[in-house]
Length: 199
Image (tube, rainbow, N blue to C red; front, side, top):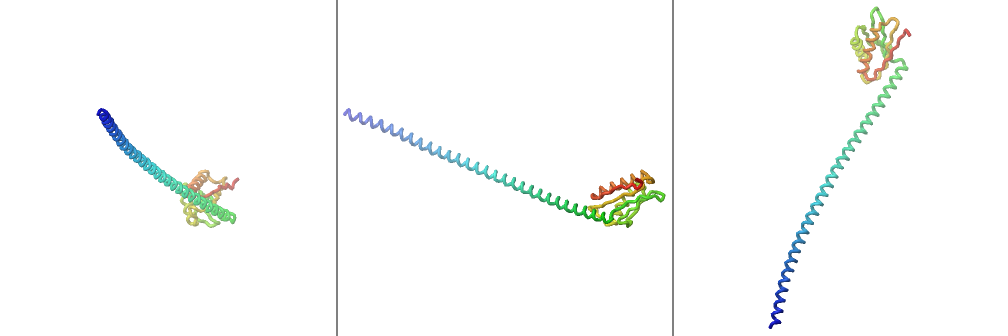
């Protein structure tokens, strides 16, 4: 009878031990499941962040490429326009030189009769004249003469200011020089040389 009691005690102890093992196993399964859920959530979060970062980098790169493309296109267009202007200016300069070699140029003659008078000629054809009273009056006469001669502001104009230094007044030469300089600001391709016939 005593032996049976011992066996019964052992069975009871094993049952309690099995309960503890089952509880621990159940607790571990719950912890593993929670850990897996956390790991999965963490992985999903990292994947989403990486995808967002990749999308952002793609967008920034695309914007930078578009900006670079626009800058390049703009630079190419600017260079092409500059080349066209250079070609146009070269052709206009060549035409002006050809006309000059044929004797076609604008001439400003300062004469005294008895006061200073400026005659403006193109190909020996008089386009206008002005009494040398002030720089403003000479400038107005020059611009009117250029308009009468059909000369546009972008045209190349070769000009000679001719005066006799032994009889011309310094004041008159200075007024005409100032007017010519002012015309040069309005007509960007206006080139004038000064010829003193007394030298």
